Image (cartoon, rainbow over all chains, first blue to last red; front, side):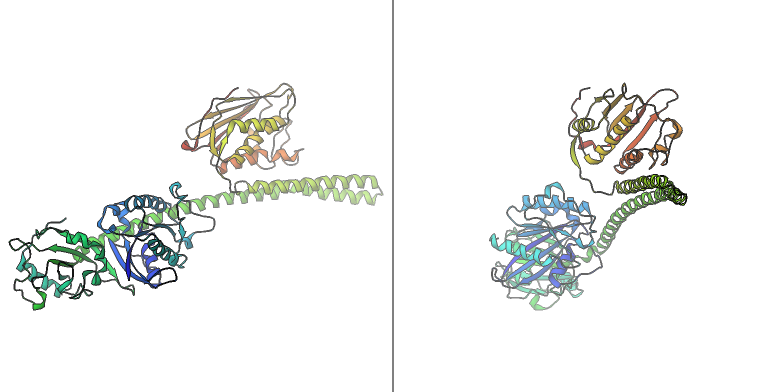
Length: 168
Length: 419
């Protein structure tokens, strides 16, 4: 079975670990424990009609890396990235724009999906505002909630499909 | 690359001791990166006879870097601070992975056949080429704990700051609501009482006229009653409009203020002799055009309608771009507003007339009585400022100065205007 490496990037506290926990074990914890350096999750995706079985190696990174992650050894051979921001923290959306630009430059041609997490915390009258650089992002950002599970599975499945479609 | 001293015997002995205490593990690898031997608890997936990436998939992408290590026994390949989380979500100990390559026979690298105090299978045969050390990253336990505390604090402070901003915003809104409530209580209890009272009196008049057999007088009182009820209805509608100011979501747009002022002055009817002079610099700004239109329109309309010598009067409208605002002054040469009445004219259903009448019962045309109240409320809503200067005892006329907030970067251009 092929193994593909996916990086989870984003500011501290945006919910990267919660997203991967939701995806890998279907759980959501309320205890917050920041990730130090990296935590690596292995998850087997079964074969589908359009895709062979695949093992994802998900590198959940320390939000403190910021854009220095792109010059670290951790990024080696990463096939795709999920870049996460917190819908309730505008600063994390700005950081997401920087990380997306860094990823495109460090790993050109590798898919990158932007995730606006914690949308369950958004009040109807307080919609987040994307930085100008992300307004025309392709693919458009996915609204996720590790708490409710909204779009979490889709985010990882899309990344896996993109990796195989591009032959990475 | 990191340079570490390699001292064979003590290293292996120490390694065994540390492995027994679960803070160290070792594995020997051949040139194909197959595991040839291992010991220690920190490498549960590594089995002799299997390739390195089978037990440690995290190293699967780094084979080229490992094979490229020089044979000096000093250079190493490292992945520090890794935590492997098992499929049940249980984290293993946080580890550092370090791979060394053996030095040649005459080198200074590891002599893995050096007798050590430990299980014989810990040593490898001649095929071993690489030494993988797995160390518990907990040697930095204190640093990690401090780092975690700092991060928790950082996030907590950010959350507190955001919550405080939100609290301030809600408090400001609450204060505004309380003021609105107070205004409304005043208006309802006082200003709407007047037409209510008139309705009651007119009903009495109708009753009296009917008792006296005076149908003509009764009809006249009925007509007055209808007028008063229409007036009351207008007041209520205006009150609702007033309450809605600032509650509608406006969008920021580029606004050519010169075009705006031209369109307002062209659309307002005025007596033939009343001149309007536009002067100053009218830039294109990014703002809320509808509220700005409403404010300027009401002030000019007010100056036109309250001018006592419209046949020869003049209204001057000037704009001055400032650092954070666009200042607009609307000055007329009408009768002016005495200082003692200047606060009242901004209140709902209050207006001033030079003949001394003031208040809801005195206003002939009700649409005028809410104009300045609308203006003041709208300017406050966008964070601007409205000042009135007038002193009829010394000089005719009134000047309303609006400081309309403009973001410094939002001003697009500032063309010179004509007078």
